[in-house]
Structures are given as C-alpha cells and as structure tokens.
Length: 245
Image (cartoon, rainbow, N blue to C red):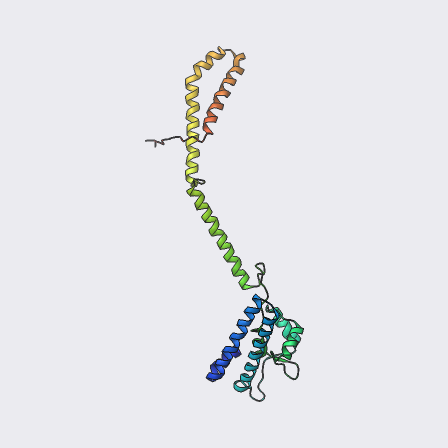
C-alpha cells in the first residue's frame, strides 16, 4: 500500500475510506485475472479499475491533502525521469505506456511537466513487477531464494546420507579405521604363523643350496599371495585386542 493511500485511509471519512478500499481491491483482483488470462476483456476491466482508483485517489488528495500555498511538493522533473526511476526499481513500464496512462488520468502531471512523487508512488502500485532471477544478487528476494535452495539441497543430501547409513552403505570413520587395523593384525599374524609352520619345509626344499633360492622365493611369493587374498576378502574376522600389562 502506498504512503499516500495509507494517509488517506487515516484521515478520510468512512464513506471515502470504504470507496478507496473497494477501488484498490478491484485493481488487485483485475490485475491477478489479467496475469492469469491476458485477454482483451480482462485488460479492459483492469484499465477501468485503475482509472476508477486514480480518479478516487485524486479526488481525495484534493479534498484531504491539498498542499498549502507555497509548500514544496517533492516531484520528478519529467515523465522520462519517472520511467527511468520505475524501471530501475523493478517495474514494467515504458514512456509510451506512461503517456497512455497519463491520458487515462492514472497519473497526474504538473503543468510544468514535473510529476509529484506521491503520484509516482500511487502509480507504481498499479504496475507489474519485473520477473527476478536467482542470479540477480541485487535482488533481496533472489538472494533469499538462493539461500533457501542451498539449504534444501543440504537437507536432501543429509537425508540421502542417513538413508544410505540405514542401508549399510556407510560406516563410521572410526569403525572403518578399526577394521583396517584389525585386518593388518590378521595379515601380520597369518604371515608369522605361515613362516613358522613351513620354515622346515622351505629349508628342505632348497636343500641348503643357494642355487635353489629361486624355488624358495617362488614358494614364499605363492604363500604371500594366498595370505593377501584372504586379507582382501570381505569376510568378517573376530579380533581381540589385549592391553599390555
């Protein structure tokens, strides 16, 4: 609601106040209908509603807000300045549209070509806003939307992770590190046990002869491959860690 309309509603009598509210609601209703279905009938209804609001507002401004003689009224120097200002603050407007709306008495222009700021504010209430984009960081609504989208993405990512945990797709890092440590112990223990139990077999294999070293290495490599294969499996091992006393 524009400042002038707020002020008019406060100081006007009950009859004028009710009429102004009715005209203002009619503009909003017809604008919504025109945006949903931009046909000629809806456009005519919207123009008529805007014209009625403008006339009623002008009538009430003269009746209740007539400036004292010599009082300075803030204004824009020209209609071109009005178009530039409205465009910069995000309204759909052009010089030709402003001229047509002036003819329809939707906005009042002073004899010297200047436009009262109060008229511009009231006129802006009848205009459509430009469509914002999420990349326009100068638009506070766009920034808010961007933050909401990021927050929603994070929530979805967290929910997907929690669902993955329930399905067993993830394990806590500490559990993963404990699993690696346990498998390392198993590998070390397995190799030591292997070497201890088969050392006699390997000595006999080479008959204490250096030239038999390749045969010994082949046997060791084969045994190591077997142990590593077991280490890399997904089988579950039960490992007990005992503290040194």
